Length: 201
Ligand SMILES: [Zn+2]
Image (tube, rainbow, N blue to C red; front, side):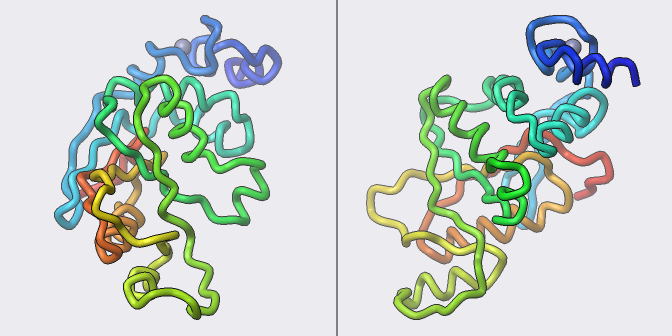
């Protein structure tokens, strides 16, 4: 409780240990546990740490609107990406973006793009269930699930890696991968900051 209060009162102290000029220090992020690699309906997914301890608290604070956590969460994912990667952030619903003031996954991806010189593609969007006029057949087919594509794949599109904050059931990632693949994109895998402890595959 005091740790939590302290982090709120002194915003540049680690939410886990109160030390450091960080909101989540590397030590506390690592203390959540080891990374994990799973396969979801043929999709290779890599998760940095379990959704536990200080990391869980940090992601919760981040999603409640404290955007400063984005830097330290990007640092957590940083060792697992290189400049050959093009990340596709899983888009947040409009309602949540409005409540929070930002799209948390897109924000972390943009920081990674700056610090690691990776690519970020915002080709994926939330399906609105809106009229389908003016879309190609491929685009309509790709919009069956909770996502849609902003455009279909071109000959020079790189392989894509989905990026999300927490891996829970994996259904979101599978849906997103299916949407992109239907639109002609190649999805090489998925990366998430954390995986929920009750996740089973
Ligand atoms: Zn710490």
